Image 1: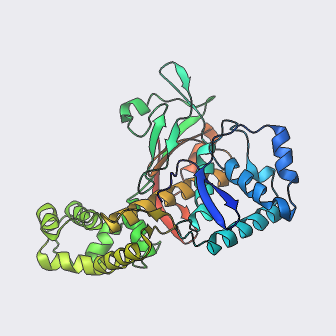
Image 2: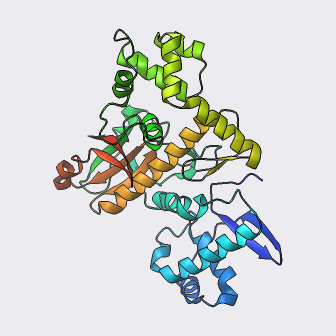
Image 3: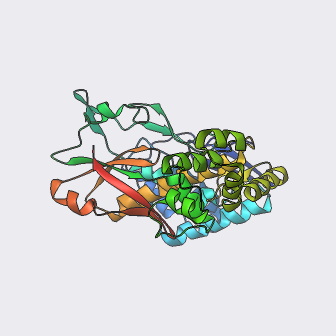
Length: 345
């Protein structure tokens, strides 16, 4: 079964059967929120779980924030119930991702604010999360993902705030190497570091070696890597060995054969084995960026988020906070901090 990730799945329980449907988008008013808050009896736990999942969708009522209406005890009770119920019915594709990562990812996009462009305030676009890997696209509204950089300079935030962009440097290689335990957070230049470790021919430029690393992670053949970078066959094999590329490929292919999908670093199911390593890295990096930007907005109350552009975030703050915000050199989640660059748009 292939899930639509644009909205949170709704779980329906009936006897010994369980179905997963995409819950219809709903509008929630204060009365219904009070009703949700009051549901805590065990015989109504299913309704509470259903309400909770609906509240995590990109709702029309943007000001709704579930954490203000549901206690930690209630949340734990019905999430424990859901996990137990799901495991009993062996729905293995409903992974920890739906309970731990995806809700935060959706909340990130509910935090975004509009920008002024071409003489009017533009509504926050509606993002889609339903690609194979979870890579973002925009289904409605101004498309920041494809906007030219010259047009981005015309975007204006509220009041006299300054519009800035925070951008991860080489997000996918950094993320992969860190999660594989090959580098730590002190590495300042991921490509030069690997080049030095493998003692690559010094005549191979950093730019060429960068192409080799990225091509390898994207599943390019050895002949293609050699053509793009100028590396020797021995150096290419050494690079693949260092990256544990073949071992990871075999592990992911086995996982797909056994379960019908692979899981990214955060547990998101990927229902394709056409390029398992590339899909694993790309999907994991997308969720990493979303979680990192979610934390960034939560930790800095003086800023407002406006748009996610893959591994970059457009945000604004008042002039007096710009210098302090620009001191941010790394961003991420617990245990994985990747270098970033902040610049004015």
